Image (cartoon, rainbow, N blue to C red; front, side, top):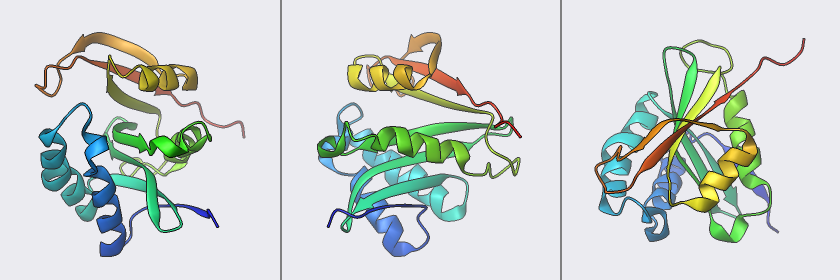
Length: 164
């Protein structure tokens, strides 16, 4: 049937679906076992206690994408994980997911976020291309942010208020 659902995890079943997707071996391409520590010790506990948020994309019961973010006191939203299953790329799901993240109410300000911030490994050409086509602009110098030997580039996207 291929019915797409996109939702914020609301219960233990939803969290288990997200966790399973985050821990899939193919999602460890740049971070290896550090991905497990981030999922188990930071992402899932923070989502469960409300310090982080997520959207999960599911087709016929299987997770095909996610986005996890933290809202910052300055009104920005920092995206910490963004994945689309390779078999679902080039279907505008990434674009749709980022648009949804732009429109989710900021947990601190109570309004829409003012900008999106993220980083990606400089050798992840597909991600770099996608984010720059979406409108993200690099800032700062690439750094090994996670002590993995990979250089990460920071990107930001200013979000303008819709015309009233």
